[in-house]
Length: 106
Image 1 (cartoon, rainbow, N blue to C red):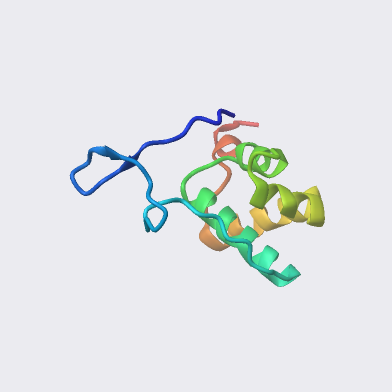
Image 2: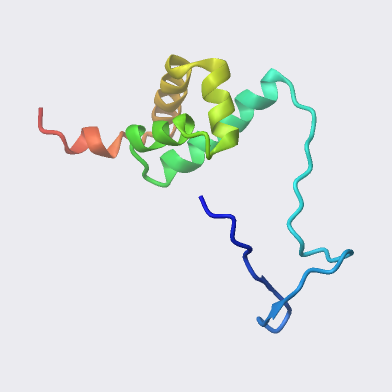
């Protein structure tokens, strides 16, 4: 992962520098959450990727990667079986089979 700065674009599409009161500056703000919030966040992420056609293996790799902090903390707290169950429930609800398994003739 690189630490290079991404350019901010002004209204005309030209690069601009961030000013102290600039509303376009990317700012992370921590918010207190409980376990139910983590579960709902996981459901939203999984639903988005399942509906977008991601395979179970590819989606699980996101949960296992520490570079995807939101998903990784859920994987560490809930465990891999919980994540597998969530993916399966989401696939059933949206009737979207795992694209890798649906191609497998066996």
